[in-house]
Every structure is written in C-alpha cells, then in structure tokens.
Length: 75
Image (cartoon, rainbow, N blue to C red; front, side):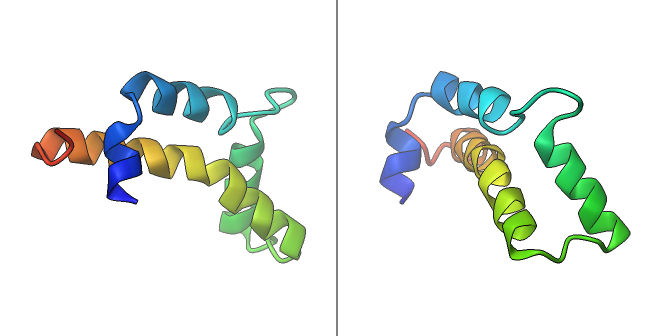
C-alpha cells in the first residue's frame, strides 16, 4: 500500500479529493452531509456508512500522501 501512495503523483490525490471526495456539489458536498449525520447520531443505514467511507477515501489517501512527503518517507 505504501508503494501505491509513494508512486501516485500528489496532483492526482488532490484532484481525487476535490472531485470524488466532494461530489455531488449541490446542494452541499455529500461528505459534509454525512459528517453532519455522524455528529447528529443519525448515520445508521449501511448505505450511508458506506457512502461516508467512499467519500472519505480520497481525503484519507491525500492525508497519507502528504504525511509521507512531510516525513521524507515518500521519496
């Protein structure tokens, strides 16, 4: 997994987070809706939980990429 993170250009991770992570954009980003549901305690349906995981993945990948670059481990 670390090889995949290291080999992926930073710009791809940023684009994925900005598009896949935030889509659909109207009326509000989907991940924002799911985070609000999580905080309110209404995130209970399996589809909503899967949706949160799916939209969070690009942000988690970007965070891992930035962490690897910051520590010098990402070559």
